[in-house]
Length: 121
Image: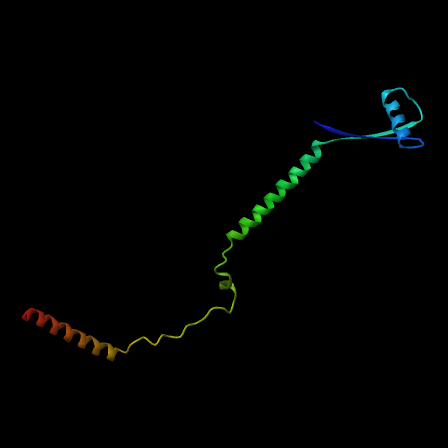
């Protein structure tokens, strides 16, 4: 496992170059006093694991939302709403029995006459 360590060194110096010289001496072991050092160490992998788990959770939620939207019937959205059903009046193509009988009689006469004409030839 990898760790990240941050070292903060505080010292009294006149300018930047003197501060860098004091830090170099302290870290090499030549200077023992007059420097205050603080360090923090934390594992690097923990941040990666947390980031990975957040990304995976977001992907799962997104996949669930997409599949949930595809399962819902979108064609019949208004079918379940009360008051949208319509009653259609009877069509005017229905014929009377008298007209039907007349048509059938005329049709049979025509078929018979055509059959007789075909036989006579």
